[in-house]
Each structure stands twice: as structure tokens, then as C-alpha cells.
Image (cartoon, rainbow, N blue to C red; front, side, top):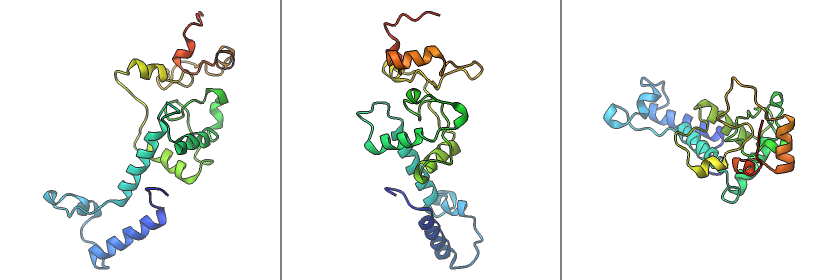
Length: 186
């Protein structure tokens, strides 16, 4: 793992840390109290688990980059691999998958590699999702049309209908600028 730590090593370090702090005896003070800053009665003990989760969240943030030119190669590969493990009940068309980190698409926990699985699990644990208060025009134009994060869950979505497939295949409409000039009318 780059910038990360395998679970076995994390457990080993935590055990060694616990034995060192407690002199190989059971602790009278909880780990949370020991990790508190000195001014709050703790000793500022380093939290390896929180560090590892923070690194996973930073990696996951780089997956949300919508510009494929700016996105790192490993992030593009990770998104490609995650796109192959989408929950089957969603029936997401292959052409509709533009950016899984921004779209409302659930990734299965069975298929992806261990690191990707940890990232998705960490995102779910902290309830992180794509939200914005006042998106810029540039951001609005980069948003995906299909499985949009702002779609109304009470309404039936037209992500896989005939019109949507035509827009994707014949007009390459994947983001909002892809619709400009088409003169869409219901």
C-alpha cells in the first residue's frame, strides 16, 4: 500500500503501543482518553486507525476529479475497476458510467480489490457524498446527466430509457453541455 498501512501491521503496531504504554498490563485508562490532547488530560497518543482512514479519504477525493486529463492514472484505473462492480439491481448502462464518485451509483462490496473496497467502506462510514451549495457554472457543466447526484429519489429516473440511450449513443450526451443545441422537447 502506498501511503497506507496493511491491517496486520496496524494491529501489530497498536498492540506494541498498548504494551508499551501499559507496561504489558491491562489499562486503567481508556484509549480515547490517552489519545486526547495534553490540555484535556490525555497524552496525545497517535491514532493509527484514524490516520489510515484519513489517507483513504484523501485517495477517494482524488477519484472525484471529473477532468480525465487532471485525474491521476491510478484513479482512472480504480474508477474503471469499480465500474465493473456496480450493484446488479441498478442496471446501469456502460455508457452512462462517467464518474462513480459523483453519480448516484452503488458499488458492490464483493468484487473490487481490497484497497478500493476499503475506500468505499470508509466513504460510507463517514457518510461522504457529493454535495454543493452554490456550484459554479463550470462545475454544473461537468456534472453527469445520468444517475445525477441531485436526482429526486421519489421520481422514476429515465437513465435507461430509449431517449437516454439515444442521447448517449447518437449524441454523446454525458454531461450538461452535451445537450446544448439539441432542442429537446417532451
